Length: 193
Length: 372
Image 1 (tube, each protein chain N blue to C red):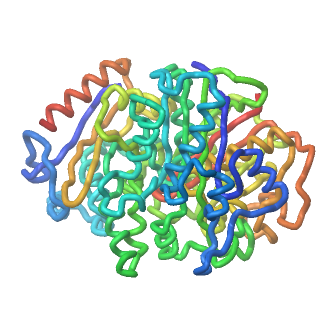
Image 2 (image 1 turned 120 degrees about the vertical axis):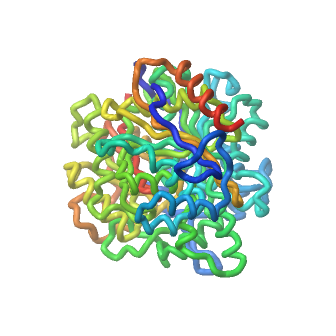
Image 3 (image 1 turned 90 degrees about the horizontal axis):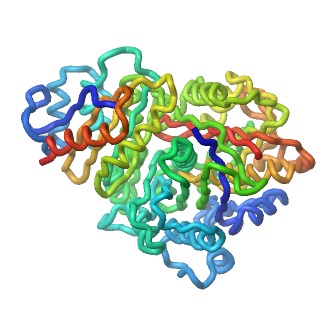
């Protein structure tokens, strides 16, 4: 497996980032979306985690033939923002379906799948800290299916206005898990100093 | 590549502690779904269940999800002969919300807290792998664990699924108008929604069978509808693709008259109709079928795994339960369940099981199991 492409965000604008990844405020996600210049009104219904995932994945699509490929995201705080809002809404006797729909971390993969028509295997894994050896072993399991030529994988996290992450387009090749693990760790350490 | 087998499994839910105990209740058409003081139907642990199922070792006030996984882990540790702490084991925890209500100030991540419970109680050093994939979390865990063993990355996978019927989810599903005001009726003409449930399940996956009760995992697939974040695709496309891939990967010429199919069957209008369409498209109409949520409620992340383990009892005993709540056929696909009023079928010769699940985020899972 090897990383063919990767994306990240910081405060320098959607197309102008350089240097390290930085955490972004939830309100800035809408500004970055506008810079994309696309028309996808569903974006505004999403919670911050899903908006972040959407923005990170947008540049990964380079071809139309990716339906069988998959999305695997590592995350720490699960759907914290939606969970917290749902809990507050319950206290105030006004829980709402729109917010409750986002109280599952895998919805971010669902939103990205809808956007890019990805019908392959998807999932979310919750971790305290990233362990690149474990991450690489896990990613390798989803290349089992010979129809899968690439996976979008990464780490995305959003909590109380701190939105951060990176996403990689990983393709099959002959490199072993150890080499891939070192590569993804190098990318991560280069971005998240 | 190795083959993979479930060499140990167990469940706990309001109907009982232990697969055989719960299966016996199901054979006697006993449901775990009850109405509470506010008129809400769910399958939840009562104070009496606390005594009978958890005993004095667990305080009634302790959080439900961690209580359930410790109950299953404690029993597993006594019954197996390997070291749980070994780095050869992959521990996989599968849950949608964990003990979401134990942390009202969100001082900890509930799912990480479940992992820490396992680490501290059993001396496990490597953090358990945590899958949170809506209502297919447990089935995804079985797929992930079996691939890890099959590919030789681990000697063993210990997969544990759990979810509780917290007021967090009760309130949530009520706002989605997904909840029934009676005991749910999967695939029935008059179905009006789901009932929530809670429970936990554990399974150990290894690369050789332990005995003739071991169940082989022949293949497993996930897919995404890529259509809507909560509603299933009307044409069942995502589930159909998972089934299609599953049957391609099966590696066996599946004898349909010896195959059991257990769908997700939540009792909502849309889910059950979608599944019937997917099964018809996959030409699985002639399989023997059973749906469990009339007995167990919808146990969320653990539902597929918990129900699969009950299906293993069907394969072993040859007894096919009725589908509680199913009285009159109410989906467009011609699929056959035993009606609630019929007798349990005995002496069924069933060797294979296809278990499916679907969940929010457009997720679908399908796994093919067989007796050894």
